[in-house]
Image 1: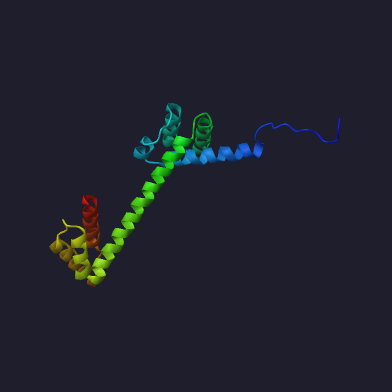
Image 2: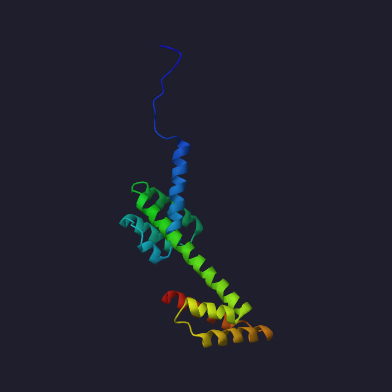
Length: 168
């Protein structure tokens, strides 16, 4: 026998197994935190759905931690690729929605700051926009600012812009 020993691959190391379990637990925690509507868009097995439903009913922090560990254990037995893909798609959708809201907020702020030129821009961009309503809301926002009142008109303007965007 030589001094060089041949080593056979015994599978992943204990550390690698722990890292994979922590990843699955993070995915499980994400699944628990999702809304029911988002969770319904993900292909989950019956056993995993039951485990997530139980996690929603748990109030104790330690019990919830153990339940998420159990969810990770359940996920070891299923194909994770469709779940990970669906989670990524939901995340992209949420980021896109957030980006659209930020654009509408910026447009609202420009309308308040610059007035008629931006209102005309909005009317040309959104053909169903009501010029009169935009002007009234802008005047109302400015009046509320002068009187140091909370800006309810600002919310109304944002909602109106959001309606226009959804009609588009």
